Length: 170
Image (cartoon, rainbow, N blue to C red):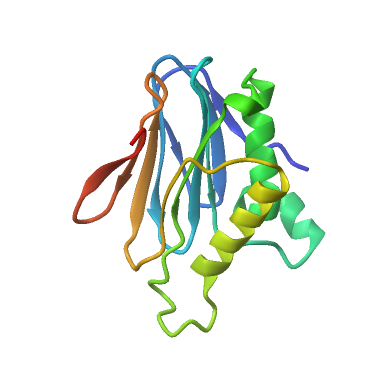
């Protein structure tokens, strides 16, 4: 698998569509925009102030080669890469705080493709299969979201066109 993780030790990190990044604190933030049917997933170790964010587009690729070329594009390959990225920086699995936003159905209101719903389902399946609890989520609906994680506090913010709210801690 190609190593497409952006790692940084200071400052702010912007994660694009079909991308992921990890950041070590205590200062800085990691964020992404344009979460429509895509999923934005943050993970954070509060003791080490290490965090990561994945912005994946689709549940799974059609071929293994697609996953190898763009692992962050898919839940099935992006989630393991994100977890490996923060664990490689010293994060402890049992301390991780996991939050998610996105998975709207704005492009497919009749439900034909249901990409947002399919993205949510595979995420839940992968987390359940690996014994990982989801602490907070803001998914579904029809709005585009932005998601950010502040490393000094672990605060996860979700922004839409009409509001900004703290997703974690509640």
